[in-house]
Image 1 (cartoon, rainbow, N blue to C red):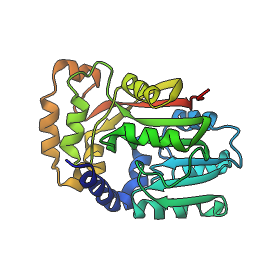
Image 2: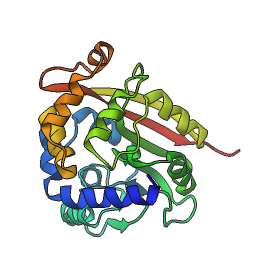
Image 3: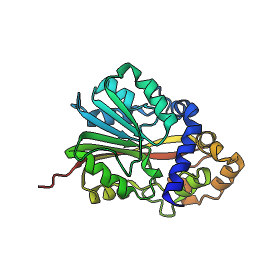
Length: 264
């Protein structure tokens, strides 16, 4: 699939999903913030000391992270997303901080910013939509100041998932998906794009098959029976890697803290 076509599919997916998005995230993570406490706290720690400084979030979504950053870290916050509907949610959520943020409709591969303008940036649950993540990571490096902090987070493949079970599962549910990466693969990608990785955390969490259908499959007319048939074809090794049960499986969320390397 051509990248432009995928971007349109991603836009359409989130325009439909926007009204359900926060409820779905709260359900999965069992948290009002729509994320696990460990992930949120790691992001806060990585961006501590950024009060009043410009921070960019690519894939700002509904603002579930950005609004928390505005409350706790107090940066000058810029959020970018492909979806108008998600940006509307973010604007409403961040309204109490209306003089401290900007929201922009835009593309991660073509950031509308000058070089070396941001002290830090984050990209959460977004990279798996990028057909060529190197393009976006190069753009991220371009707009970051030297030694600027970059926080990456996304669902990732198990390090021993050499057949790409999780990618195949995602593609069975969603036409928007490009690919997932192992934690080690993403670390290498970041290093190749001018970043120094300072910390990596892999956080397991459980997700039900019903939630997978509600979050993804329903928007692409995938029936529950199709998902269960796919799960039944998992090998014994894949069942062990993802702790596949009758009603749910374990997913892995990788959080990486990196710094833009100095050119000197």
